[in-house]
Image (cartoon, rainbow, N blue to C red; front, side, top):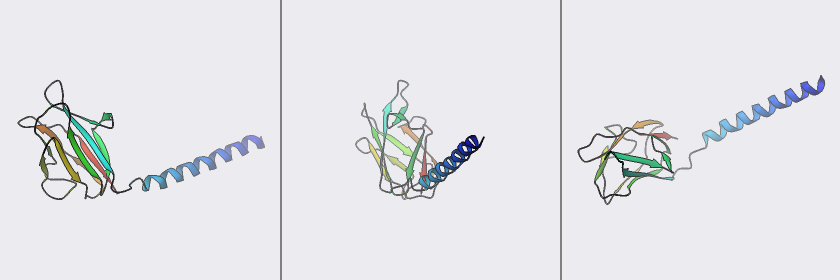
Length: 133
């Protein structure tokens, strides 16, 4: 019985240490100055399609001070990135592409920032940037 009690106590202590270390590491996830590229392409329905690091761009996690770029691939269309007044960067909340790129530097409080990406005259998508500090 003492062996089982010792194993249980050791497991509980190891679990507590793992939990504490994961929590403290989670607080230091922002390096500042990171670069994030969101690929914008024209989907089969003519609407913008977004990808981030080969996967979904529905929620992209960034840090204060990071640079985010939306880069058009596969076509030659103008598009807009529109934060509808609550932008996580200074200046205009709506940015038009220049040579297929929209680029911003994040300067914002921690939180979720919804935005739209649309080709001229189309309905916007509704992804979001999630800013960490």
